[in-house]
Image 1 (cartoon, rainbow, N blue to C red):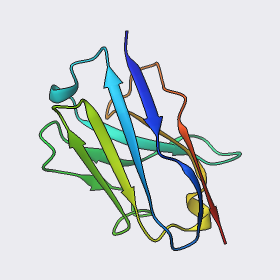
Image 2 (image 1 turned 180 degrees about the horizontal axis):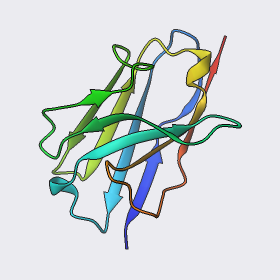
Image 3 (image 1 turned 180 degrees about the vertical axis):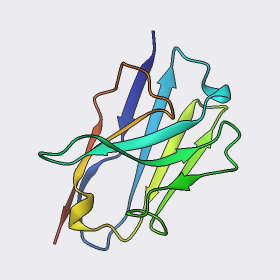
Image 4 (image 1 turned 120 degrees about the horizontal axis):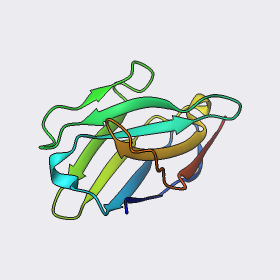
Length: 115
């Protein structure tokens, strides 16, 4: 059974930074591209970052490019998200999943950016 557990969210002022982690179990982590998604209040969940299985080819949505960095540690079955220069519009619940997502999602981690 796939289990995805996100952590590291919190309340931060605009311009601040956070580092999110996502631990994955019950799946062949090292052979799967992984991604981060987020869901802002009143909006649909959206993709914004992907990293290949080997960790060498990240891709980002324009909204986070240059501010967020996705990385992974296959030995720890963990994917990370370094978020810098946070903006109020980054406020959302953040989730990780495969790049082609499983039907099952974790509980997410809340990020609130105050202006």
